[in-house]
Structure formats: structure tokens, C-alpha cells
Image (tube, rainbow, N blue to C red; front, side, top):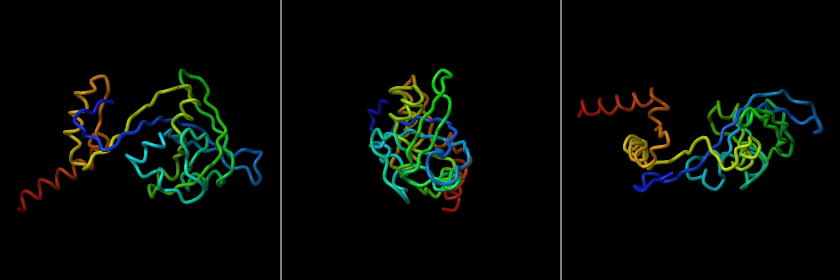
Length: 193
């Protein structure tokens, strides 16, 4: 990713995978449900520059670089019936239709405050998910952070011109209703002044 104009304060690669998760039967206690989850592979060192997800830990240990463990949203962990130290069986689709499977150790549990993330998100290291899915050295997306949300249009244009082979989307494309509300607010302020 080329950013010669220094529009981004931070940037981090991410890899996404949908997987079915279930508590490993060998662990003590009752077997949990099988639950579909979004497994997000993050670069532990750079993710902190774009989000607070790794700082929302409420139990267990932090995710380490190249960790083969997983952090779970608190509601997802509850639904699966797991706690830090338990094992999870994961099954999904890998690259080119292959089967992606793994056994994760639950390193920790996070609470982001976003009910969707807390109910359906699992975090693991980018390298671990790349290996599981058969996508070495690849990422589905790069997340960037700006100094302010209103810089999105200018930053998008600059980044797109410097990276013509990539698709650059700003939060405005991903959240069009919020964008309209903010634009309306700006206009209403101009009218009131």
C-alpha cells in the first residue's frame, strides 16, 4: 500500500474467514453448541494503530504475534460455553474450495461494546489464519486510520490514485446513512450561522 502523502496514521492487514466453532469434546464440562463465527486474522503489531479491538480484553491473555490461539467476543464465548484455556474445533472453507480446519486454544475473551462483534467475532493472528485458509502472505483488506473522519474523501482520492490496482473505500461508502447525517449536520450548521 503506497501512501506518499502520509494520509494514514496507521494501517493494518486483515484476513476474514467464516467458520463453524464448537467446544472441543475432550475438554471437561458440557459440550457447547456449534456456532458460525467471523474469524478475523489480524497483525497483532499493527492492528493497535487502527483499532481498539485488542485492548478490549476482559479475561485471559492477549493475542501474541503469530499466535495460534483465539480471542472471542464475550457473548460468543458464552454461547460456545468456553473460557480461556479451553479448546475449540474450527471448520470452514479455505482457498480454492479447500477445507480449512483448526483447533484453537481460547487465549482470552473481549468485550468491544458492539453487540454484533461480541456475539460473532473471533480474533487470531494473521499468520495463523493465512496458514489455516491456505492463503500465505495474503490479506483480504487493509484498514487505515486517519486523524479525523472528515478527511476520508480526500484521503480516498489520494490513496486510490497512488494504488490504481486496489479498491479504496472510505467509511462513507461503508456507512452511507451515517455519512448523510454528518453531511446534513454540516449544512444545517451553515444555515444557522
